Length: 358
Image (cartoon, rainbow, N blue to C red; front, side, top):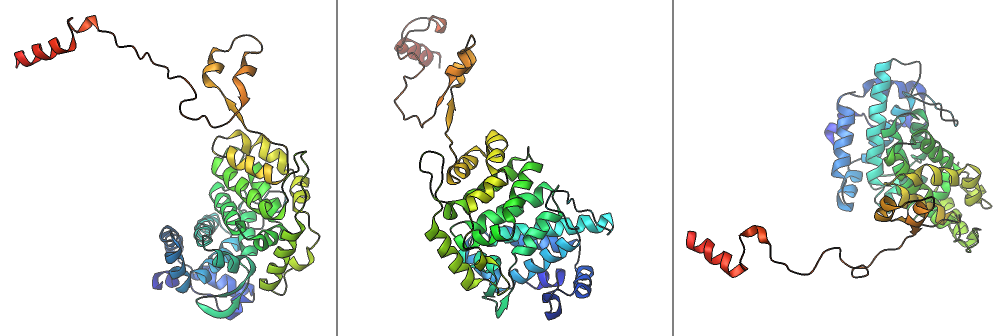
């Protein structure tokens, strides 16, 4: 903890209020080489709930908030159209350092979100175990970092992974993410990094975790019914925990499914994430929870390789299911035949000859 506070000075009351002059002073006080290493070390340590609680008790939340704010301020302000690439009036060296700091901070926050209470505090704001005073939500800083480094795969992976972890099992957090424009940020990152499988996987997970509690199940005809009870409960939980300035309470009539579909989520999940082996399962789950028509298919590699004619490839593609052991015949000959290349005779005779040679 002492090393972390030396690398990243704790925020003061003026900084918590958003003073730019104080924020700039803090940015220059951060040790550029030590700060990302300290945050990365804390992230590696945060592997279970006990360690996460110990880190939070030592002030990890305040350090992460400060690092996110500094990282976002040094990376520029990426627009909603995805043109944010960390470009700003600062020097290239400072931008690289800010990117490293922001990526390390997001990685730490992502692991801290393994605890349900802590991720709710980070998303909606509130008091932490290390302080009795209320802290603002860290979600705006997280989204600011994601928007500032649109073209950086590592930042996008950690950012989308953090949003996915925050939304898991917490409808109030999911609703707050949508209310802050996180849905657009997720899909923008997936479009930019089409070939980066970790980004596609975390993005599909984020869509799925948000939609799972805020969108009703499909009726089978591709139409999803909004679960009004889940949304009402999410709004009630968000209103009780969020800061007074939050606009979540005004989102009673929000239709999460329509928001994602209007942003082109179905096309992104089908045509980008669904084409990667490492993210196809998450894309399938996201499409299912959005109420879209989707099915899994199994590719028979043997049939595909031996397929001939115009319809051969179509025969190799069929609706897939898990094959149980014993359903297919083994591809080996169970009949034992003596090999003539071993000198003739039965097994007993060969053993005897081998023993006699010894």
